[in-house]
Image (tube, rainbow, N blue to C red; front, side):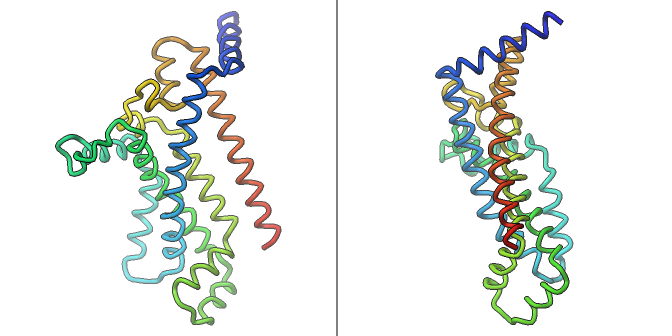
Length: 233
């Protein structure tokens, strides 16, 4: 019991101090995960709307691929990007390995299928009447997608929340392509791993508390937007 009390005390003191190192880690976490989520959503939501509305041969295979991507292990995404960004890789000349840019790219790979899959599911769940009305309007694909997007706005917000939750909590991909370099590529999840390895359990728990708090605040904002969308639907 005394051990647990000591760890909790160290954790709360670490958070309460909120020193320069912690501030830098939090700022980089928000930057990397925020950009990755934005990229994944900007690309994934329109793709998901199209996938939910489209009818073509092989669509079920594409849906299966997206669903598989939703569950891809982060270490696999990080490994694939590492191979591309390695010195002798296709993108090695970019010099992006072990930079925040590589971390954003890795997390965006994880966010895209989440945003696309959740959005596609929301569009497929449109009522039969709504789908018939869309078909009867004989609109172009872009206008149909816009109307469908407005109809499933709460579902799109859920897609954003799911994508952010996926990337902010992952460690494998950013650890592989970022390297967990202090002051350069260390984010909350990799910092937790680092502190736990060094037996600094109080600091590790404090970082975990900060991570959970950030996730809660973002999800509260997104839930508020989702409920507003449902209220005006």
